[in-house]
Length: 370
Image 1 (tube, one colour):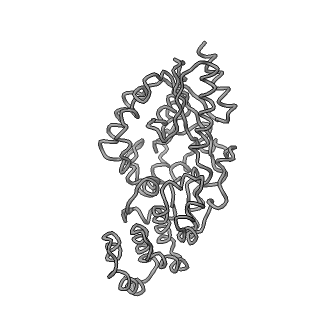
Image 2 (cartoon, rainbow, N blue to C red):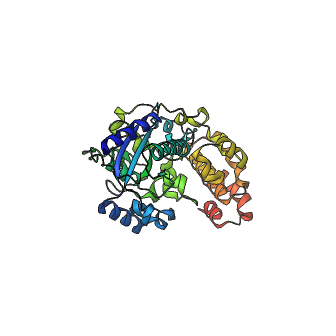
Image 3 (cartoon, rainbow, N blue to C red):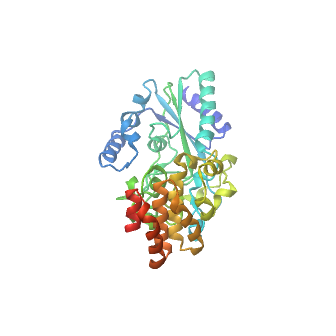
């Protein structure tokens, strides 16, 4: 009986546009909970305090929802149609992570999760709750338990059919459904994802220190990005695809068939000069419906200015000089750093003598003085 119900759910999920479907028990192993506790205790979550605040619910699905008995884990393919790392060879252009070049995946995935949940409630009398990654759900361990893939050495889910490129979502169910066979690790001796990382964010295989991760630094981190990470960031201004893109399992992946995940032309290789000049209104307009919008204009331009500093492009000096009077100290400070990289000592000192006496922010003053 349970297999028949599972078949019906899987058929409906595929009809709604999901590419991968699996079933897991509403529980996580002691090993996964221990990994989470150690990760938080060591502070590797950085500024993401919400991971600590909801650690009990993250570590145990039945704390999140006590009535849950089974979890339907679903994946949607967002595979790129070109090499995500090719943009790194164009330092005057901005690198935006593949997942953020299209529409906000949260909306696209959640709408389909809700449709599946409504069907489960109406057709098979299941209590349901739906979650995407804004909720305290350990999606990747659940994805592995459900057979969708395994957590690779870079800690992301790897699929034999879709490589690195699956968005995940879950429907928690009150039905007691037989779990699918958990996927085993197929990484073997490969370490490409570890060695490619520009900031050495992996202290060991299967361990990530978010505080060193470019995705974390450009998206989650709210303040000044430490100097040691700025040059390795290159022209990556929102996220980083390096560890995902080099995975050999991507040879089995295919480009996404979902229109919502196709890259918008203006986000595939935008000019740093254009992005640096965005005010708040222009930023909101350009990134309407995009996950990029959530970091706000100031943090975004902070990232752009680091990329400008790494570009070596003298043509970007005038644009950067204009930003020295920006209202945001975070933006001003990164403009100073960018100019310190682009200008010779004499030209930089002229600007310092002009702007430093009136600067009131300590972080910006430090950039001028360093």
